[in-house]
Structures are given as structure tokens and as C-alpha cells.
Length: 217
Image (cartoon, rainbow, N blue to C red; front, side):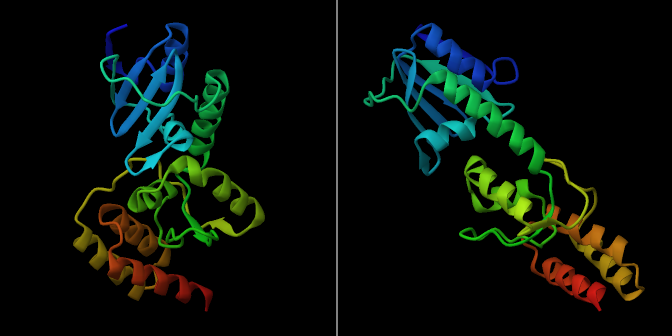
């Protein structure tokens, strides 16, 4: 096959890995920031931004949309497979299912070895995106931390891609007024919306920490 293009919504990552094996692809597949090299139908190289190898390939399984292009014009120099295609597909599906389960959770606590700012009111998907981390690399540590109690839910889930309506500065002013009037639940919701609109907003993060302190008194 000289070239193939399409959408991940029509032909997903698992389907493409299987298709590559069936048709013995040798070449390079590009999809967003992900590049995967195939030799005789087996994935032998993968890169995604600053990351490479098996984890970069598994991260691609979490992309639900976007375009892809395969071409045999650029052939990889690597020859050692990243893994058995069927096993990679099964692991990729597991990773995607697990990410769907935890990505929307708003968590507080700590995750040893990682500097994600838990407790700021942001869902996991946005924390990971703000750090440029690989989602698949954090799944097992996060799941284990939730089971052990090191990480705990601190509010309702916020689905991936959700953005509130309104202006961050106006929402912040409304939230501070609600704090002064003792309406802590509504204030927390607005502060979390500010952080979704403006990740890392220092005043909103500070007010959210202060709000949590007030609630413990």
C-alpha cells in the first residue's frame, strides 16, 4: 500500500494496528503529533512530542478523533517490534477504558513522583494536559492512589473537553461575593469554572484553597 488517509472516528487506532498487520505495512503512519513506524506489518517505532517507544504508541489509543495518513515513502530504520500487535491492541483498549473511567474526576491528595497540582479543582484530564504528560503513563499510579486513599474525589466529575460559559474575571468576582455571603458550594463551582477557563489562575486557586480551609473550621 502506497498511501492511506482517513479519520480516527471511522478507523480507530486498534483497527489501524490490525490492518497494518493484515496488509504487512512498511512505512510511517502520522496522526496529530504521533508518528508510528511499521515494518512488515509490525509497529517498530513510535513518537509523540518528546516521548517515544511503547508508551507513545499506547497514548495514541486515547485519541478518539483526528486525521491519519500512512505512507510507505518514509520507512523506519528500526527493526525490533514494540510488541505483539494483538497484545498492543488489547492493552490499548484497556488503557482507553481506564482513562474514560478516571479522566473526568476532580481529585485531591498527592501522587508520589508526580507534580500534578491535585486539589486545585481541575479534572484529571486538564491537569495532565497542562503538564504535557502522557495520560497512559499516569493511569495505573492514579488508579492505585485512588484505591489506597492517597487521592480522593473532591467534587462532581467534569467530562473531558467541558468548558463553562462566561468570563473568568466576572466569575471570580461572583465567587468571592458568594464566599463572603457564606454560599460555599456555589462559590466552589464558580472557582472551578474559572480554573477551567484559565488553567493555573493564581487568584482562583488561592481562593479555592481558602474556601476549603473555611469549610474545615
